[in-house]
Image (cartoon, rainbow over all chains, first blue to last red; front, side, top):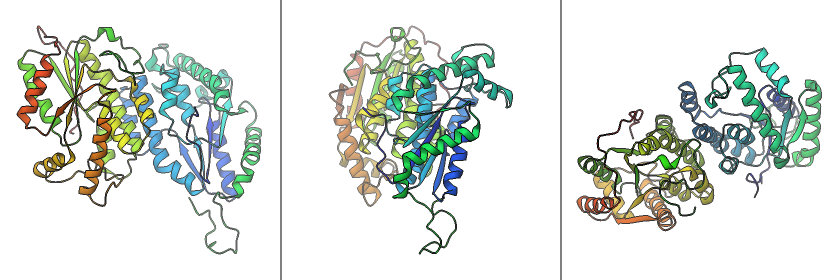
Length: 244
Length: 249
């Protein structure tokens, strides 16, 4: 049984995955700017960002109300809202949607929390299948070094403190990220990730991504995907892409 | 979903719950909108408490976690069907883990005004995949009894018009515009809901109660059937952390 709904539309969906500190957000941001500069209509969707659901999630986190099951469900609700009101209509319209984290994040993180693999895979079955899913593979210590070096204190759920893995927040984060990493590695084949070595220089990773995007989507990008009409053509009054 | 013994999980065990510890009884009242479930739950609660039982009653969108968020999301016009299904499932899971399971551990009679079956029926009425939602909701406990208050759409219409005097946007399924106005949409949407609930009677072992009858008659029928469930009688009322704020429903 396939994991997701097939993408039968003109638009494309490109997603990035990896543990915290793998550098995936930087890479998808660079890729989406590049695609936009090529004239494509590009939209961007971030994990946990639905205006309808965000407030409930924030409340639950602040008051530490979540169990593994409700944590999983509220993130699926957030994802569903972005899918129904944002990603799907844009992909239908012919845009390229870039997503920073997708259902795979839940497959890794929720299972690391003790939720059943089968159940969480079924939960996201309504999602559309990405055209490309990049996984940024990075050794745990490298990612931890990036995260623990330059940012705010780790948050309760982010560090997996709800699981009682360790008293110390950093130690808990280490163990929890290790579990998530194991889940990503275990699913890499099953879901067909394009694996990028995230310890390479930023420019090199980006070069590899663009190569894969160009090779995989070249033909289909020419037909159907929205882009700025060349200057002088009818309807080309605006300099920017027609969508977003 | 396969038939299971009461107080087992349907498909998926909740992490950290040992069903052997659950001593209470789980009784579900199901049925379409405006059929009179809430009235019956209130009557049953009074009666059970007079009989000396400790009772918890709970219903949809009353969770501390998601109740508020659902009610806010319903005020806008962007709540999609899958998002709605999952939001209600989150709400149910929060109540199951934080109210229902602790009450069952303490030997309560738990009366539930709408269970996962309503979430499933709404999803099915909106064209979602039945197997998908059945598996999503598979962490629910199998109740000791589910009473399905069944009435035709005409009865529901007359109760809405005579009772509230206006059709509710969501109860009319106006999010998917089943008809040109609230009345037509209500009739078509409720007919779909009833059909979906009817299809669950066998697999989920509902006891069908004719809800075209008067309130007292329905109540006495429910009372007679619930009395047969050999409910645990609390010697003294077990202590239970008061379930967190019930959002106005």
